[in-house]
Image (cartoon, rainbow, N blue to C red; front, side, top):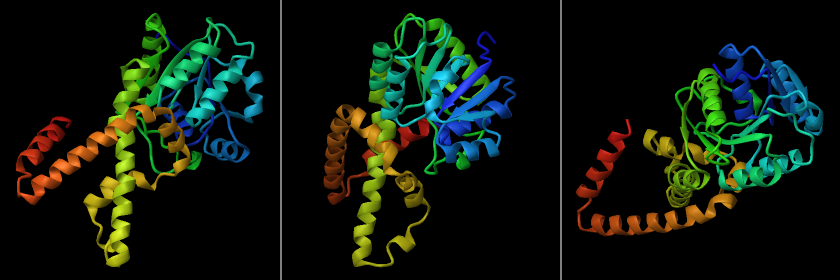
Length: 287
């Protein structure tokens, strides 16, 4: 494999950062894994063998001098802050920086603005996660067969994008796809961000019905639970997602409201068959 970093630093060892460490270890990565995180997070990560060494966030200037690959695993605005902080440091030649943020336009823009030309930045977004949080919920198989989007800062980064993709596929077991940042954000608005809003709205709707009919939530079965699982996630991370991608999400909400209104009229006239059949065909084609 062309890209073989000797030292990987994971900035913020939470669920995703911890799962990356666990996956690297399980798949035989022979290099050193360093974690930068909160004291409590480092204690768990070290105890579970997710990382080899742990340092507070303030240790980044010292850690970066021995790092080949830095993976930023904080919430989006904290990732932007870390990139800005990196821009004021002396960074080693050959350093590759990537991230796991759920939106890419703001992050890639920060990398272009603050990182020096000798550092290669490739935005990243693993389409995997859980409603759980923290390194204690880390799973070495979290990324297996999941799509991992990569968003280069410019079209001339083909070599490093390809070699990083090889590394991620080999050690995380994911499938990679390369997109520009704007396209990525438009796509995930439809297939990730809007669904989370809808899941929350469905729970709110059922909860309101539960105030009138107390048995409502106790009768919620598999379909409802599957559709609303992501509504159990904490809002803290989603705040950054929504605030950095609202331009793509807001028009989709309008489109969804229109579709619901159209389906409402079809339901009133017992005419939902065509709409349901069309949706069924699309869903089946997804596998």
